[in-house]
Image 1 (cartoon, rainbow, N blue to C red):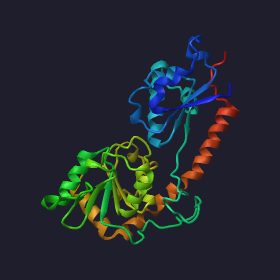
Image 2: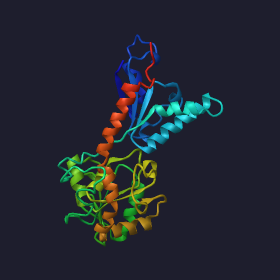
Image 3: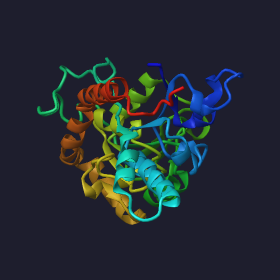
Image 4: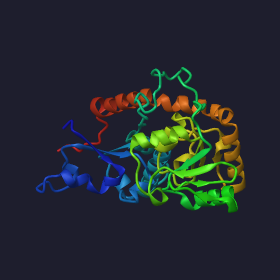
Amino acid sequence: SSDLVIWPEVWTHLIDSLQQPSEPAWNTTKYQSAIWWLSVNNNKGRFAPHQFISRQDILHLVQSSYARDHVLTKLTAAVATTHSGSDANKNSEQQQHVLTMTEFIPYTSSEFALSSTPTTTTKPTNSCKGNGSKENLVVYNPAKGMHWTDEIIRRACGKQAKTERDGSVSTGGGIRFCPIGKGPGGRERLSGEEVVELLKTAKVYIDFGPHPGMDRLPREACLAGCVVITNREGAANFDSDVPLPSEFKFAQFDVDKICSLIKECCSKHDEYAEKLDKYKSWILAQRVQMKACVDGMVNEVVTKRIGCVKKD
């Protein structure tokens, strides 16, 4: 069969659910299965370690270097438990089942209002610099890393902290912290358009939570002209997934240094935002890269048929 069923990493426990009840086992499947690893953490162990070796029929599509490292590590460990000594051919065979993919931000949408479609070699069509409407606003994702974010807000605001009606917290120095959400604590989701409009107003986006994959918000924030500051957890530890200049990535949580950088980024926004132009070019190039990845996957799956589907 030429059918390919792609499962998100959160549904790996359902991979065999399309089998007919009369079909006894996975090795008689009539379709090829692939896991689309948009994240690592969100799988939560649903795809068990032993399945990396027992399910040779499955193709792994990885969205990030973090996911690729995770899958190859699991495959290597599985091979080690079933083969004594070094087996380079077997490891090479495992790597054939892992295909690098990516995803892109729809930068041609009206929300980002870019003037033209960039190529992989040209400078961004609009700079990371603000357009004159930027505020001393720091935005964050309220769904993760809030124990770190709260500490940053407490240190930046101190006793002069003032909570506004919209849930944001302002400092005596004129900097305001706002969750990307609405309602108490920003727990209610914003629409995509509302997120973009908020990011366009902000000068800084901070993310000190887990990075289960090549997350969307840091990239959207950069496209909207924010200076992006992160930790090095998960995918953020891979410069190929989050290629920010090192001064904007913290391996160790140092609240004083982070607050100092935030203040600098707000007071000299254009200067600091310009340092993210290469990051922005990388984000914009992902549309072209995605097409190349899909073409490569089609070549592997349809032309080479790398042996993932068991024959009757």
